[in-house]
Length: 282
Image (tube, rainbow, N blue to C red):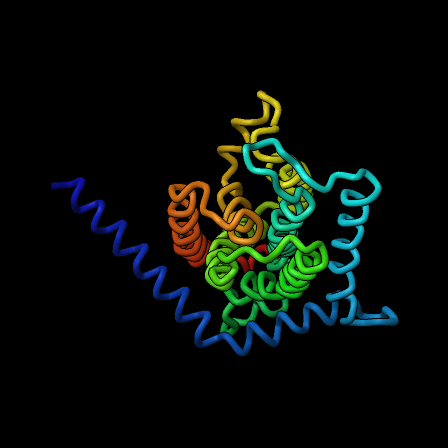
């Protein structure tokens, strides 16, 4: 009986957090958009091209990767599995979403301290700050995906029929990232060392994902790490939708949806629980 009561209480808490998070995004959507645009503008303030760098930076990075792996190293196709596939497309499809993840989470780590003036205002909805760090990275994702589709068209590989599910996958990606950003922003307010620690972990994690390693080609010591990496289902989902044209693991897709929802509700619930102490920390 006690167990059932605890489960019901836990479910009720998560349900309230889910509704509150959705309400925040709907009601404060214009404010989040305004703050995200301001972050993009401030990021390149003083530069000659200004906000154009939000498009040029990911564009140039994608072009560099295509040039290095597709021409300098001559790595164009890979046959690590039974099906031959374009390795450059596989790499870009995985690296583009990871770029957004890394940039958003790194920004979220210090967003509370960086906006101390707003945090100390009683009437200001502090939870919009981590949300705006996520939406401020959307140009990186959109430009990267555009470069990927252009590459596929130029290479003559053809577009995967599952690309129609890309908008839904982007939504799942955003839901997952919002939850993580809320949790990391809350932790970053209390632990100043989180910023450099996270920076190094994110840099290391790019090599522990199925991005630069074709399926089935990971060394024995890394294969379990890549398989159980919590970000692997998301990266693999993008590669399924954009490159393979087939869902290689339906279980991973379901796991991804569950992880996104759990992160979204749990991250927001945690943020709300500890945000009362932010004013004393910044």
